[in-house]
Amino acid sequence: MERWFRWDPSLDQLRVRRARVLHYLQAGPRVRPEVEEAVGEAGAAVRRLSQPRGGLARCALRTVEEGWVSLDGGDPFPLEDGYREGARQAVVLLATLGEGIQRESTLRFKRGEYLESLALDAVGSALVDELAAHLYRQAGALVAAEGLVPGYLLSPGCPQLLPEVQANLMREVPAQELGVYLNDSGYLVPTKSLCALVPLLEGGRRRGSRAACGRCPQRERCFPPAEARS
Ligand code: SF4
Image 1: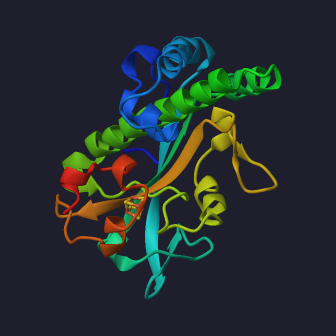
Image 2 (image 1 turned 90 degrees about the horizontal axis):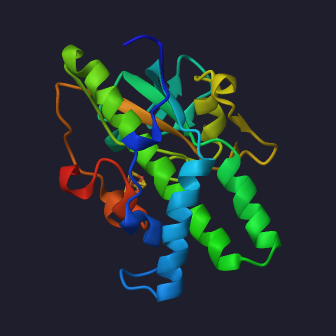
């Protein structure tokens, strides 16, 4: 795998998962008809408004001291050993859908179309997750010949990775090439973007279990899925 791998998938390669959309709407599997209708409309709109792009940067993951690591010798940050499993390399994954969804969602909100705005936002979040999942699988395919497997996808929303680490990750990727940047508050712009750390585990398999994951509210939407987590 090269230091930087860029991938611009077609929308046909990405499928919005209803369960993820409902997760973002904080709704159960049964929703009112008007919500169902708004989600259906948002599913069509999101395809018109999205420009999916993504990439993977490979870097060295070094131990600075116990429980602290750095990427390519940059600023150290905490990462529990159990979430790294001895990995000495990692990929930083960057995925974005562009600005169209956020722009339209804001317009809808300003027009008082609150449900339509929320539905579009939720479908966009589910689609960027799907794009990240594709990139995660791409990473696995690119390093398999070296006996490496991708470990957890740790985004700064994960309780194991401080929000400030987003800046460390962004330094590793040519984010401008994908039109993504960090604003003054440390958030990714466009908002329908995701930047994450994936340790590359040696020996071809994941080991151990991570106690904190069992208590994590994001467990259901974390990668790899729950069944591959122990
Ligand atoms: S389940 Fe939670 S704590 Fe565990 S890796 Fe996923 S986001 Fe992080």
